[in-house]
Image 1 (cartoon, rainbow, N blue to C red):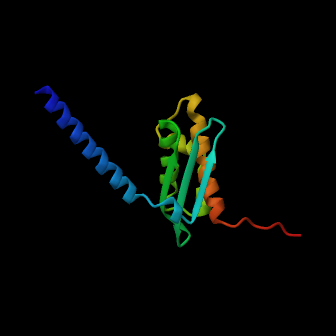
Image 2 (cartoon, rainbow, N blue to C red):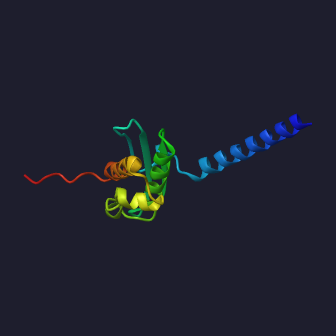
Image 3 (cartoon, rainbow, N blue to C red):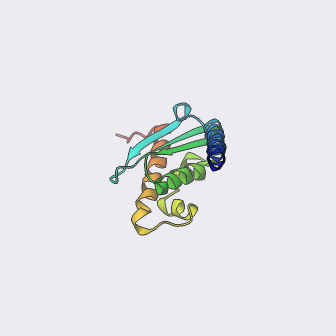
Length: 136
């Protein structure tokens, strides 16, 4: 009898996780269709990717991804969320400290995750905005 209960519980959990993945996948924009995108690997080995969709010079949707730890995931998702509704110039003002505050704080040994998220976010903005050419 306990085996049936265990199997039923596992089945329910698989359905819930499947629905969660489907919802998250459908609600987040595809990084391939983003107007600005950056993928950066930090010195710790974690890779982060942020995609920004702009309309009328404001971010209307954003996506974040990492192959790193849960701290990296929290930071990259916080950075992508902080960018929503902002202009490119306002996004460049988002720094690691703001991301750290957004995730509720980080230990000293995980602050680099917030720094990498800020760097990736700025890279996504830079890929969308052509850099000004120096005057001769």
